[in-house]
Image (cartoon, rainbow over all chains, first blue to last red; front, side, top):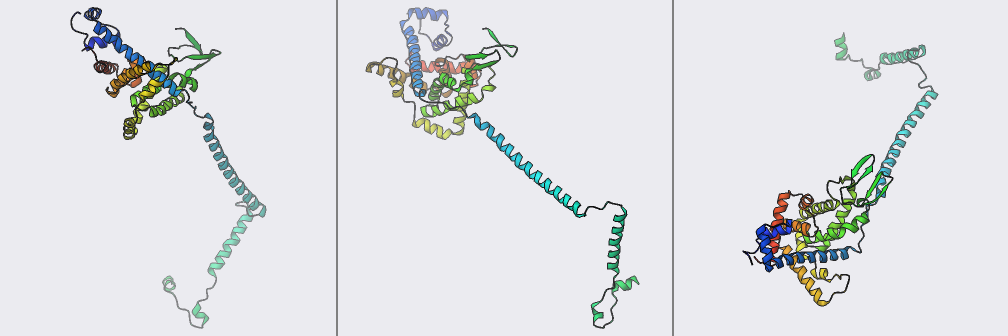
Length: 160
Length: 203
């Protein structure tokens, strides 16, 4: 045997990078204990590798991975399309209802008059005259109904 | 490695994703497009890695399943910057991390209550029947490594397994666990030293 056994750095270098310094090479050539240790380490890890892989292969042999169902991807789209259809139908029905009412008004003559036409002006004059007459109609004071003279209100006296 | 002409570009298939077929030189279908092929190739490795990392075979089953589904769903985001193998292990590591973060208490409780059954590992028959002596020997060896692995820190155990069981190099391990290469080397050296001591080294 030459010199001390392989130190941790030499041992690790040999296992990880498969390189060892010249001193280590000389030692390995002469030291059966270190050679045996390296071989044993490698063999134990290799056996563990094989056994555990065999175990996991046996464990996963019967199991099945189900791919995510792609069919579900169109479901949200269909939902959105249905919602859009319902909304569109609602808007259309409201619009159709308004149109029908408009048509009915036109057919009843409610919207028949054209603004600033002579007929419209005459109509407005009639309405305004009616309002004026209503405002200026003589008001019967409740006291007068019983034969008492009507009192003048403060507002009337102020106007005078 | 020869390149393939895809959509007018010479795409070098540097990934180890096995090319199943090329349709008219336009569409490349890899193992990522077939979840059954993906499971067949990677599930045992993932299960083993996860099981010996978290110490619970049932939990590892569930995480491995999630890992395959996640890889399948995210296959379009795979840019081929690393191999599919490395990518799968990086997904597994993220899932393990998420699991340990989110359900830390339950996880450790569970991990302590159940560990990988070594009797089950040793009892799996090889191609030929094993004699009782061989069975016992294998169980002893497996147990020896398993116990030594359990004494490592989580990071040391992960890098040791990726290096010696999954045969990844330092750069791949670095990508898979999201750790700088020098840190990976340090963990690996410490792990080997610790394993050497526990397996009865001459020093």
